[in-house]
Amino acid sequence: MSKTPADLRHSRYDVVIVGAGLAGCATARALARADRFQRRRILLVDRHNDVHPRFSGELIHPRGAQILDDLGLFSALSEAGGVEVGGFAVYENADARFVDLSYADVPDERPRGLSIHHKALVRTLRKDVREDHSELLEGWSVADLCRDGNRVDGVVLEGPGRVRHEIRADLVIAADGKSSTVRKLAGISDQGRTTIGFTAGVELVDASLPRSSYAHVFLGAWGPVLAYPILNEADGTTRTRVTFDLPHYLPAKGEALKQHLLRTYIPFVPAPLSAQLAAAVNAHQGPLHMAPTVNLPAPSAAMPGLVLVGDAGGCSHPITASGMTMGLRDAQTLGLQAERRADAPGDERWFDAESLRRYRSEHDRYVPTRQALADAIYEAFRGGEDGSRAIRRALFEYWGSGASARSRSMALLSCAERRPHVFLTEYLKTARHALETSLVPQHASMYPVGDRVRRARGAARLARTKLGLVAQVMWAQVRPGWLTRIETR
Image (tube, rainbow, N blue to C red; front, side):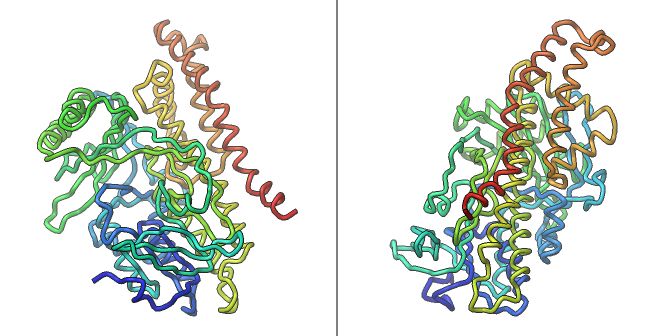
């Protein structure tokens, strides 16, 4: 039987975490481990009594897998059916050989990530949270925030029958996703938030993936098709998730959408996987599982009494599969700040103003770089017009130029490398490659004139339209310190 607020042990907590998904549960574990004297009170709240019915993030890069291991959560997820993933196999089209982007090629990093069915992930983490000295309250949503002047001082919860209950806290952590209710109630702007499109997903059993235990990206349709193993069943079978990237204005709905996928997406998937996928789409009962893809430029991740973690603090198109890993990095960063204050007397706030400033500075610097990378990759991976296809062709040629190019790209994609100048350098190398193969004589002779013109236009468009993206990344590196100076004057 689920708890109600009347069953809670306290009326005031050191930390209330809103959202008991990956980011929220990992944050609770990181804080519980930092609290070596077990004197701090931690409460997780989630509006769902069980897992959200819609599929969500399932692929975790090695950096995130290492954080899970450090928090003592990796083994439980592996036992729940998690699959260790070795990297990405990227196909420019169904007839091409794939580009092998291996995690093992990234220096000083764990060689494998983790992929796990979203429902198994959340249920396993919530079970572990209950075994910590944290408390979990399910089936209650946040209706309002308590305030003490300009400081957030707790939450007002609403449960069955619209019953309300007030919980006070020294710190509220919003881990409630891209549409965060807490962020909205706090008045933190989500200016620039856009719904890019939608992701439709199906599950296959024992799919014929060209590269075992790899995530696969198939290009050529309007948007990329992504396939990755998500669950090793007890009977030895493996479940695979396949997702289709769809535009904001859906070309079809209901049963007609299935036929659209069969005509315009599945032909770009190599056999025999394409036949298995077509059969799964045809056999799927009812509408396909759908989820919106959202771009939310990173808002300021902290204010007095409140911090944002995971997608609540900024999200981008899932093509780089970095969302879950970034949520785990947020949890790790908060845990480190809690360790810094581990010896503070129990009557002092666990997170003082300096702790919140440090967290905000770290988060607000690395999230925009990740978002800029997702924007760039998504533009190249869509079918798009001639310019986008020219960029994609240049990217594949760059990856084919040598192992070091693939290693540097994979370090960025997997969140192992987050320095903005490295991203900008790699980004501009691709643009330069597109220009060279269209304009420089010794390269240009290899391609027809029409192709060279398209490449040149694509490279020029890349340089022109993405100057704002470059400025965004650089501004993100100086903004946290600049804002802090303004606030402390």
